[in-house]
View 1 (cartoon, rainbow, N blue to C red):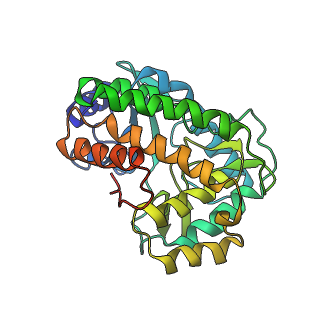
View 2 (cartoon, rainbow, N blue to C red):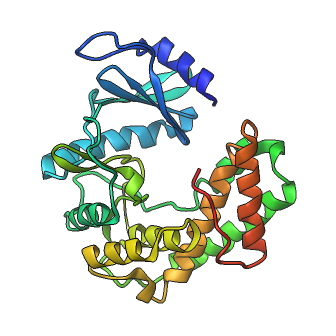
Length: 291
C-alpha cells in the first residue's frame, strides 16, 4: 500500500476532510508504515495495509477505551469500531493538540511505569508476537529483496522463537506497550500521552525496556539519554541475562519490517541490506537508521 492507495481508502470511507470544525483541506500524511496515518480535520485516521490487520485494529480500540477508564494518558478513539473499507481496516481517532516539545526518554519511562502497574485487562490481550510479522513483511517485499536474505531471516526467526519462549523474566509479566519508543509519546499542553496502541500485549515487561537498549546500541541514542530512561524507570534491562536473546529477536523483526517498504522505496532497500548484512556478519554495532 502506497500513499495514493491509502488516500483512495480515505475517499471511499468519506474521511477526506473530517471533524467538528468542518473541512480543513486535504488529509495530511503523518506516517506510512504498518498503517498510513493521516490528519483529517480534527481527526486522525489510520489505514491498515491489509484486511488481516482488522482484528488488531479492533483490539487497539478496546485498549484505548480501557486505558481511558484506567486514567492512563493515551490517545482516544473517535469511533468505537473499526471499519473495513476496500479491504483495509480503518480506525478514527481524536487528533491531539500540537506538541509543546519533543518527547524524551523520561516521558516514555513514566508512561511505561503506569502501563506496567496496571492489573490485567478486562479482555484478552495476546502475547507480544514480536516475530509474527516477519513472514508477512518478507512476503510484501516480494522480489525486491534477495531470496537468500529472506530465507536467512526466516531461519533466524525460527531459532529465536524458541529462545524467547524459554526466557525467565526478571520483572513480573503483565501489560506492555510493545513498541516503547519516545516517538510513540506525544507531549501536549497537558503532558505526555501514549500513542500507537496496536502492539499493547500481555507478556514480559522486558519487551518494553529492550527497545531503548537497542536504540542506544543501533540507532544512535546518546548514552546519557539511555541513562535518563533507566533512572526514570528504575532498572536497566541490560543487567538481565535474557537481554541478548530479546534484543536479537527484535533485531530480526526490525530488519524484516523494513523489507515491506523495499518495492516502492529505494532507501528502504538500502537500509534493509545494511541491516541484514550486519546480522549476517554478527556485527552488533553497525548503525541502523530509523525508517
